[in-house]
Amino acid sequence: MRGGDRLIAIGTLAGSLFLAAVLWKISTDLVLIPNRASALSSDLYPQGKDFVKKNRVSEGDKENDPQEFAAENCAVSQRYPRKVHRWCGLITHYAKQRDLSPDLIAALILQESGGNPDAYSSSGEVGLMQVMPRDGLAAYFLCVNGPCFKDRPSRAELFNPEFNLKYGTRMLARLHKKHGDLRETLKSYGPMDVGYAYADKVLAIFDAHRQ
Image 1 (tube, rainbow, N blue to C red):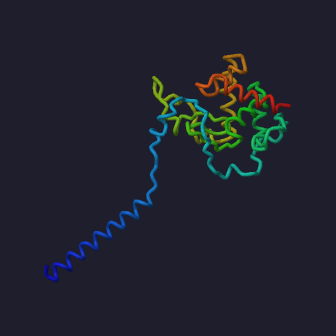
Image 2 (cartoon, rainbow, N blue to C red):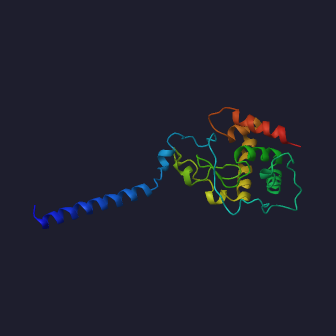
Image 3 (cartoon, rainbow, N blue to C red):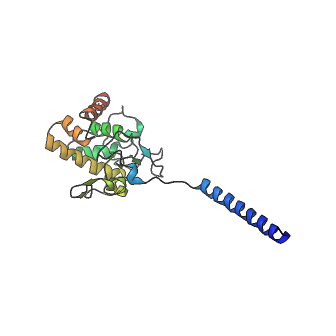
């Protein structure tokens, strides 16, 4: 091989090695984003709540008390942890408006979100009372006539603590009016495939904490 050809061959080899090194570096820096639809394939029931909560950090979830109905007397038991009791004004207002026990709503919140207004489940439920919205992960749940939750509020609305409590207590009150029994009401509010286990958990919290 002539000197010129040898230099060309060496240059080509060096260039190939450099390109391979660059491509390897890029591939190691990539972050793969899982497909949301495939992630839901193992959890296709609308109100599944046996999941790991995924909490977002936001400016609204600090240790300071939230803006609430301060002028209204708090009717939530002091036995509830601070992360739940901090919402006492809102809980009291909307529970009484729906003719529900404030301590019952506090028990449900403790079970559902632990008092975190930014709780977002792996099934797509949102906020303090873990309500399914019409968008986000919940949009993948399809019923005979289209998306199961198409008439629900948006995630943005339900991440607002007051709106979440207003909507969630209305749902619970309608279920209670339909069933007329608290255990049956909570069974309908909770997961579809656990019988009375969810209802009994919430009732146990209610009994242990109420005033």
